[in-house]
Structure formats: structure tokens, C-alpha cells
Length: 193
Image 1: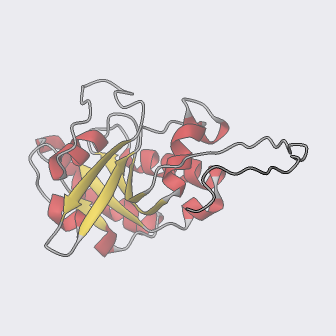
Image 2 (image 1 turned 180 degrees about the vertical axis):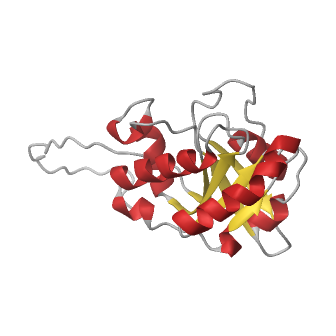
């Protein structure tokens, strides 16, 4: 405060140049992953006040969406809706690298399975192999499976078979498997807790 108009100066030194590449990664408690059109954005909008674009065609979500859910007075979670992953995402196909980088900065994954898909178990293994091929640590990340679209009668019929298949072939624990309907809100709180 005393030397506000200095009367002396020192000679400057040559500047140092440095090229930096900074990468901002999305940070969330939970990453919502799955194939395109599995119901990830509907899941996010059903449990938070986020308003992601939702439409009945693949790749509606082209950038991650964030939402905050308050489970109780003391617990709130940040959810990230990651755009749909396709085969070859670990190689950069379909903006795969951009999407997979966001998943690295989440603590837990909610894997939304499309119950109306031809083969939900195949979708599950494809997404998990893409995660592992991109980064081995993603394969070890805790994961909860949400079998979506239970509001459709044919999907509800398939639930028992898919549940057995996931437990037998993928080693998924019973406590990590949930049947939900993101559209009606069925089973959403259980998945989040």
C-alpha cells in the first residue's frame, strides 16, 4: 500500500514459453451408461430436474448432461448422462473417446439396459468390453444394472430370463440388479440408493 507509484524498475528477463494442453473432464458421482436409446436421458430427467433432449431415435444425446438428485436431507448426488456408446467406441468411433473420458471421472456407473433390445445381455457385454478396452480401471468401477422399460408387457416377461443370464454369465450380484421404468418412475429410488 505504500509503494503505489514506484520510481525504480528492474530489467526484465527473457520470457519462458511453454505449450500446455489442458483437458477438462466432467465430474459426477454417478455415470449413466448404455447403448443409444436405452433410456439414459429419461432416467436422468425422471430423478432430477435436468431437461435433456429426449427423442425416440438413437444418438439424441450428443454431449453429457448433468443433474442433481437429493435422496434425503444429507445426501445429494450428481448424475452424468453419458451419450450412447457403440461398438468401437474405444477406438474413437462415434465420438467414443470424448464420451469415455467423462466416464473415467465418475465413482459409480448405472448401466441402463434397454429391455426392448433384441439381446440386452449382448448389449451389456459390448458396453463393458468397450469400457475395459478404453481403460482397464473402468472395468473395475462399481456398476449397478438397471433393466429399463418394464412398463412394456413383453419387457416385463423377459426380466426373469435376463436376470438369470446376468447373474450366471456376468457374475452380477442380485443386489446390483434392478428392474425399472424410467418413464413411469418404477424402481428409480432403489437404484439410486
